[in-house]
Amino acid sequence: MTGQQVAGLVGLTWRTLREALAKPVVKRYFNDCYNSLREAEKPASVRVAANVRDDKNLNGNAAGRRTQLEAAKLLLHEPANTSVQVNQQFNTITGQPIVPGYTIDLRKDKARLGVRRGAALVDDGPVIDHNSTEGVS
Image (tube, rainbow, N blue to C red):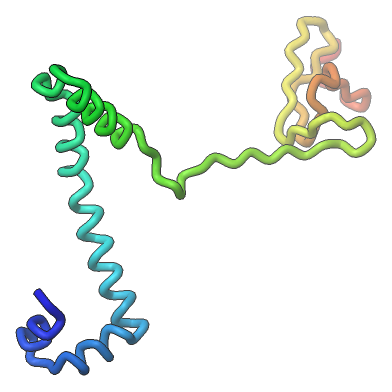
């Protein structure tokens, strides 16, 4: 439908409808409705792409195989806004990465001291707390 037809359908003039659509609150509502429609249609689109990918009738020629490949690529596509970000902090003195969290001492000797809370350097060896007498007999 054209804009004039829609305006007549809802009882507005085309100018009034156009001015309303220019308002931020109306734009936001329209975009929310449109995004809801797009999200609702995604499962059907995935089914169509999967059916094209699996269609045995397309195996007979290069164009059909290319269509299947494109459908498979579409199914593998990840949205642009999904990303994994990894940050690592380095000790400025030693240049080694700092890993926050717990350090667990798994030595089998009697001086085993258990768990220490806090940051530790990667590969800096076992953590020994000389102030603790826990676990020492």
